[in-house]
Length: 586
Image (tube, rainbow, N blue to C red):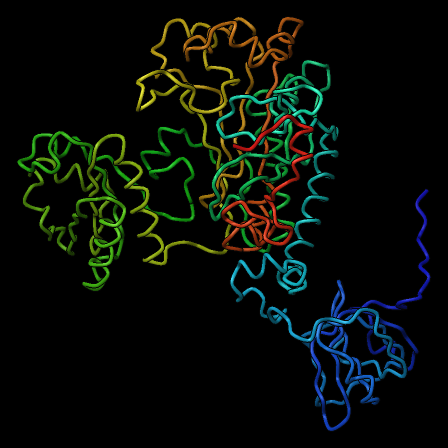
């Protein structure tokens, strides 16, 4: 049975967020960091900050005040009094009272010169912030980000357990496996020349848990990948809410994910959230309509395939090439600079130009592309691209491997420049029907596009009868506002299908036994159909806080160059340590 814990009160009777007008007249003790010091003619006012909030402390003893600098930790004891009317601050919960201290104890003195002002730390250079992260995390916004992260993870755990999932931990020291990114390797002291690897994800283990007879597993899992940083990706490690279900279909996974994410986003944000069921968009449609497999559905602009309209046109730049169009309603009234800036952006991403036509009130076209549009195709283009008077149709043309990506970038830029993105909503969708295989551009060989352990749609029959590039997999992503939150899949649970699927990608049975021996062996002893997903916690917190970089929602992140500037990692180690693990630095 849970019992309330009674604390000693040695350092405080109240936190710095608790005191109110009903406490006036009480003698209290509070502790925290001194955020600000103001001298009003011999009366000293301190803003005392702890984890919970800020309380104003009044000192009448100038001698003790002279010994206190900002960020010094003190304990102040005294009577709670109501503030004067002119000093009331309703921006903070304690803003109507103050503590008149008759005793102040300096617990831990701070350096008099700080590397930056804590309230302004987010405006400081990132390398300085990361070196003094313990100071940066005292900043109100940064501190609240980490508090929110804790609350979100706690709530996620409750939701998963309410849905019948068990929290099971999987190993951190594991084996190197070809999962797409570079491994972090750990040399073995006992086994000369052999290495452990930190897991890129608990992929193999969670599948083995399903084979072991567990029905629903989850964990808040650290994942380790030696890959370069991005604004939405921290180098080194990240955390995901990893889950797997036995005897489950793709739609079962979607139902769990919808319940999880809808509740998380609605509980921790006031923004509108896509209701379940989230929109399902095929990979092919997503690439065509949005130019990416991570579409931001807040942007209403749609990409249209116009290749056939210019198939026989007397325009060498478009003829015989894929052509995409993006119609921007109302954009005809934009300034000349707007179009010049769009052209500059287009050439900056590798396009040779950015053609467009304006549509007037009589549906006449104006622009250099107009004369190349066949007369018998104009009505088709109007209907297909949903043209309206006063709008502009932009054209994107390139080779088939590049055109969709470029069109997606133009769509995003147009949406931002035209102010079309609704910042007050979270639009979630599933991207489904990913291709199982692709062709390596350098070698020409067939390779897996995503997770090699996915079940091909159509099973063995599809693998045996279809062109590998036409085989679709039960693979899916969950996307929110243009951010991929997670990938997942219905897993392959058949040893025979696994052998065939890997053989198409050039793996022999011996390769499977060597690289994925445990899973290959387990599938020979009865494996249930199983499926799962792993929403990225860091990216979810980033969306909820509105931060532009993922490092601002992680307590102790590495910088963009995979360095821990606070602790000095990576660092050199002693020769003795190297000898113990049989390593010699060249």
